Amino acid sequence: MIDSWRLFIAVEVPPDARRALERVQAELQREVPDHVVRWVRPEGIHVTLKFLGDVPRGSIAEIQLALEEAVRGHGPFSLTAFGLGAFPNTRRPRVVWIGVEGEIRRLKALRRSVEETVSPLGYPSEDRPFEPHLTLGRVERGASRSELDLIGDLVERSEIGELASWRVEAVSLMRSELKPGGAVYTEVYRAPLLGAG
Image 1 (tube, rainbow, N blue to C red):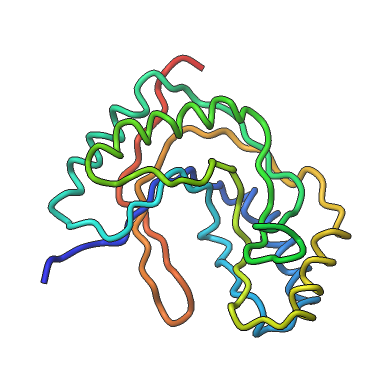
Image 2 (cartoon, rainbow, N blue to C red):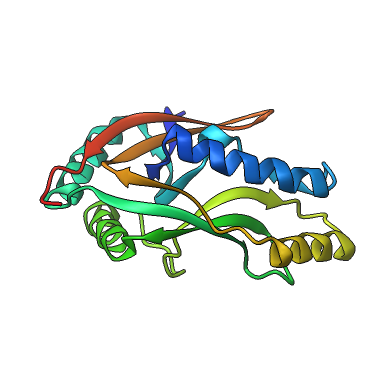
């Protein structure tokens, strides 16, 4: 059996911004029955740039080199956590998220660079458009119509403005380990943004 790790590429969220997200998550948890949503551990909340899936450990070095190439020329920029939403929409909520605003053009340019350097290594691009967000929780598949309505209504009536802003100074290659208590994420490699700001 090939020794492989489940990996993705992300922009991490600093602790102060994470605490603000955790407060929103706690408010939502009070209104939603425990069995309806699997909440993301606050320390695992991030902006995913590219999901790689199971990667043979022998291929990690070439992904690190590709990531170094991807960030070349990109400098630090600012993001803001703002607003609450659901994918695909509030009538059929499957993912509950906090939006990301700020220097989105620079985030999208960075993500494009990651796609252009990593996809040729055998990790195809997703068909869906890139919509930057911070996942708070995933709705269980067995949720009833009334439970989905409850979540959708909660998202629609929640007035969440700007929660936190932070500087993005690196892109991280992350390992995801599925544990009984939920996924645990560990940084494998960090590529700093050293280009002009």
